[in-house]
Image 1 (cartoon, rainbow, N blue to C red):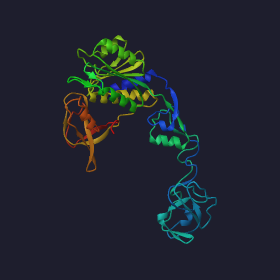
Image 2 (cartoon, rainbow, N blue to C red):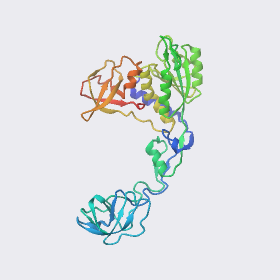
Image 3 (cartoon, one colour):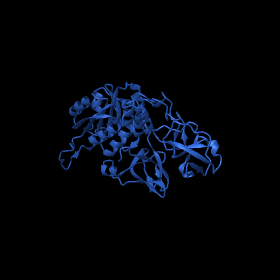
Image 4 (cartoon, rainbow, N blue to C red):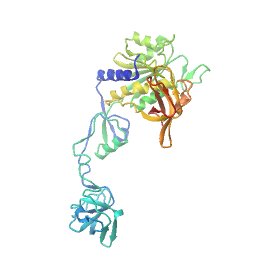
Length: 404
């Protein structure tokens, strides 16, 4: 059985080896949040395009204010968006606003808080350094410089960069199509009234939500019953997409048909188990050139295995590098003890106590308890090499990327 690190490496290796070309589409900037750039964004001019003041104050020649108490004549005002056409000469200064261009001759800006206006003159209570409170032209970027590389996920800051350089439309990677197929005789639709022994298809909609957050276009296939023929029909429909994710039916039970049916359809299995809990019987393979995942049916297993193994595939298919797990350190609120040599992901909440991050494992009767999962802000990670942790020990915490 593969370790967590080995399994993630295998998934990334397989999808990269497939070397599927990224299909490019152009979309409006306002619609680009969460997409991945397929072409770089370059600077259309120098940034800043002029020597820019970072403070409200007075533009001066620093050498003329070499000590506190110096006074200069105010010869005008420089406002953001309006040029001061003159030049600062000996004994002179210009009142300036944040974001305005520094007038010719000026090489420092003294903040208003350190100046006292006396009629048409201003007296300063401290001496500036040359270049103080000024961002020189082109220090952020030179015209033609690459600001954002292809493969960059688009967030709010990236949208701001694109807007600054005039990119009203962006070239982004096409969203990969991900089919979602649930399995089980006990599974009914979300809108259905279940009998006492049935459950609604929460996995189907939660997987689709995770896939959308990862940039995929989802294709819901509903639920396949626990028989080979029904499952085969669903799988064949799912293989029309880039990625197929099945939920349930991947263990070794009498009615777990996912692996046998995929084998009949020619699947090559990369792994059918990983040393983690929840999610140990997770399945990954390639069938007819398409990537296929079989995720355990319990909701926590589904969420954990999707984030660990499916998300990096969707990132690579969009031309991005797979993101590392964003694990942070936190102190344990209570002792934790596990027995099996597995990597555990335990629902937990992170909070601040006395200025320190503290992680508290939540009561969790089983990996089928989706209510406990909804109360978790993330997962406490327990590694096989250290299965016992005491209260106050530093531990690993993995935030939920889907949490509100």
